[in-house]
Image (spheres, chains in turn green, yellow):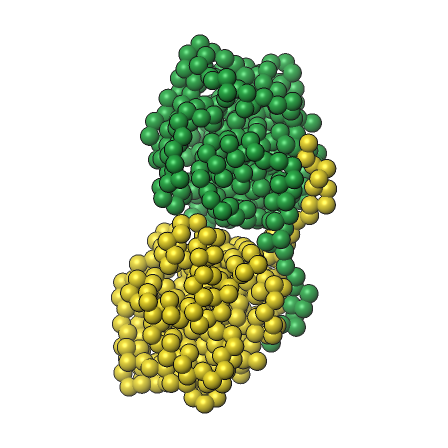
Length: 309
Length: 309
């Protein structure tokens, strides 16, 4: 089983308290694919301009990452520039150049139209709908979004939510979408909008998953030096959906494990600028970090009743 | 084994988006004691004025809560008034009247001086030191503090930290104390100041504990309606220290379980104004909530290696 992802590819200029990089490979589809391919083959649907650097394309090349859906259009690649606050919990967008992305109309080729597992990365909900409309047998559609679409295309987004099984969203966005200040209440409100499951990404605090009868939370892997949080959420989505696809079934057990793998993969991304940390993720270290989440959350209550007076 | 707690008792006026209460029982020692007594007997050392209401005193009366160290001085009881923001993550102090607390010099009577387990609740670090100096055989001293003391009495606080085994502190305060924006790095920086273990309280995100070789995190119990977060941190401390004292030893296993009971007890406090929710906590529900934390954090990675390509 493989995953089709439709999202953005771009060149990011990023400034954090730890440093600055210019025009490095970025975009939701890049982070997602590079994380998910450790678990499941991925087919990427995106657009870049004719200036897309060879080095950026080479970073994506991998036997488990199908790039036949990567369109190259005459013109400049999407560019984004952002600056993070000292604690890296907030960021300011300095510049967004849509460039070829402005005219992007995702056209899925025959091979991809029949994919059952599809990730609608954070792009305009109108484009997300166009993708959905081209799928012949969608079984497991996951989607992400952001504040910008919640504000500017709320109705289109609400239409999409009726058609996705799992929404991935960060904590602030969940509050904004629902108007519920408590995160777990926001999660439940989202379930009433369509998705059967929602995963709320909480940055340094990890993530939690709310289903009809499941509530699961996992912490972030503590990272010695966080250099750049860009793409951590998309990376989480890649680890989560990749692991879920590989496990083949949606059960309480697989959903729990998928959240853990989402947290694990995100921890590689924040360790370095752009996709550098994620590109260095190796099988042994992925397993070690999953074990570390087990180690930092396990406890026993055997003698619980005896404790109370 | 019992715990001595030295802290504040007062009358709180609290306004949250859920409502307002006036002059209700509050103070760090009240929340701590009412939580800890479910696990271990508690002896309270504090001062109130001659106007301290009978109803407030009766709320504290319990076979496991020794009030012989509760001084009543001529004058008015300590009063505090605060207003919470819409998401209840921040609050503004409208009024602080120290009243009899201004002249408070904790004098431990003979019975309490020999206590080995002592909680220095959030009060002036100068008073915390005076308490420590009166103890004849302190074995397990825990302490809490707040931004106000970090700013105004930093040197006194640093002296205290050399003499406590476990510091309980909230996330913002940990960052302010250490200058480290990442919470787990702030925790490690605190270990270099003296304590062998630090517990960082994270509100809606739960709590985590960092020891020399232990990193453990537990989520908050999701509460349907949070009415008033006042005292949640002191309540956490009561559940944590109460359970630890009851278990009798400091091991990785008991520390993990103690964090879980801290989260459980705090969940009762936030459900209602002042100590009302905490007063309603019953044995069966305490056990049920501890189990619910197990349920929302457990996962299995048996087939982990098979997942990766």
